[in-house]
Length: 244
Image (cartoon, rainbow, N blue to C red; front, side, top):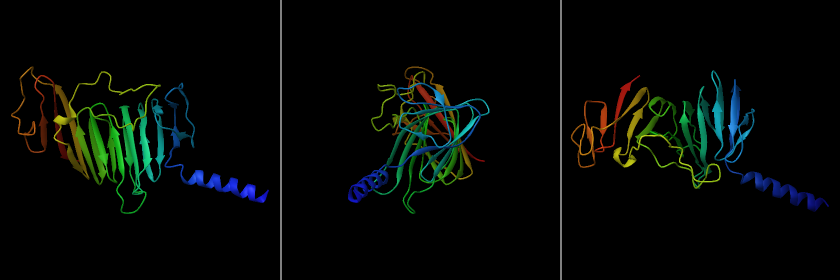
């Protein structure tokens, strides 16, 4: 009997050890709701685990804190956010990707293992903010870096879901977004501590038209602190970076 209990305890401990990283709701304020991939909207509660493909929604004057290992994400009012990816890599780092459909977040990303950079990404229909251990605010169009460096890639990204599906089928979450080509973003731009970046997205002049001369990579550099990317007859994005 004792041996049987010891085996059960060992199995439980092993399952816990290999459970992987978790996203857990911390402090909540106001109206906060969650919706699983195939479920209905329901009230959120502190201590609740957020599974993959779960969407978090905050109402007016409402906020939520999401804890992912040692990192902290503050979800601002009137925001809708989906957890697309959460896994532990062999290096010991935690890879997380979240899709920001609307609203804004403030993230404080901390390394799980000292010296091992994190793979933390917030995507929107118009851009991606990718970090390696930093603190920033992001709403898809405006990025403010509080600490560290954030790689901002303009353009509609391929959603980083690690094969996850929404509502039983593949769902990109980009309905209604302008068809910006991420390959036309020149790989993005680094935004450093105490800097802000602003995305100006607009239609180009028409087929064959270009708002500025393009270089070999398909992009061009305009005024200091600005990068313009053009796609003839499509959408142009200008990223302006300035000190806070």
